[in-house]
Image (tube, rainbow, N blue to C red; front, side, top):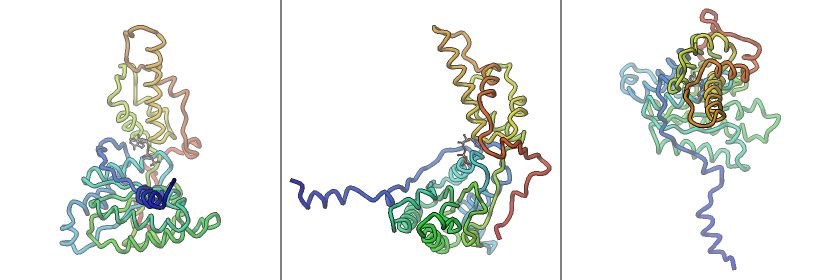
Length: 304
Ligand code: ADP
C-alpha cells in the first residue's frame, strides 16, 4: 500500500515546476562569434563587463553602473547570443529565463519563481540574468491574463531595486516588442539602457556568414560577399540557417552519389540551392527593410 511516508518522501523529491526551472550556465561564446551589432556590443561592455570586472572604477568615479540593459529587435538578430557572449566575456554565470514561462507557473508561484531566480543569481554571482520576452510580463497585456504579470513585474522591481549598486548581478532583458514593456522596469537603476539589435546590414551579413562558415570546407567558387549582397532582410538566425542548409545539401550530394565522394566541399551550387530554399523569417525582412550604414535607427537611447 502507499502510505503517508511515501507521500512525504515524494514531496521531498518533486518540486513544483515553477521553482526548479532555474538553470545556470557558464557559456563559452566568443565575442568574435557575434557579427555586426557594434552599438549593442559597446553598451554591453559598459553595462556588463565593466561593472563585473572593474567595480572599483565605478566607485572611484562616484557613479553607479546600470543594473540592466534592454536589447530590442526582431527575432533571430542575436539578442540571446549577445547576452551569452557578454556573460562569457565577463566570466559570469548565465541564467536564462523566459517571460511567458514565468507567467505559466501555476497560480501564485510566479512571484516565488522571481524570488528564486534572484536567489539563485546571488548564489551564483557574478551572474547575468537573461530575461527573454520580457514584454510578456507587462501589465499592458493585462487583457489576457490574471494579474500574474503585474505581480511578476512588482516582484521584479523589488528585486531590481534591491540589487545594491556594484553587486555582481546584471540583468539583460530582451524583446521583439519594446513598446509593450512596462515603463516602471525602465527607470534609472533598473533596466535603464535600451539598445537595438537591428536586422544586419550588408557588412554585418558578410561577417555573420563568415562566422558560420568558419569551420566549413567552403569551395573556392563560393563568394560570401555576393551571398551577403543577396540576403537583404535576413536575420542572423536566417543566415546561420542558410549556411547550415548549404552544408546539408553538400552532405546529401555526397551520400546520394554513394561510395566515397571525391569532393567533400560546400560549393557555389549548394549555396545557390540553399538561397532558393530560404527566405527572411521576419516581417521587416520580407518587406525588404534594409538598414543602411547611414540611416541606421538611433540605436543607443536611454529609456527615460
Ligand atoms: P534572438 O535572441 O535575437 O531571437 P538569437 O541570439 O537566438 O536571436 O539568434 C539565433 C541564432 O542566429 C544564433 O544562435 C546565431 O547562430 C545566429 N545569429 C543571430 N545573430 C547573429 C550575429 N549577429 N552574429 C552571428 N550569429 C548570429
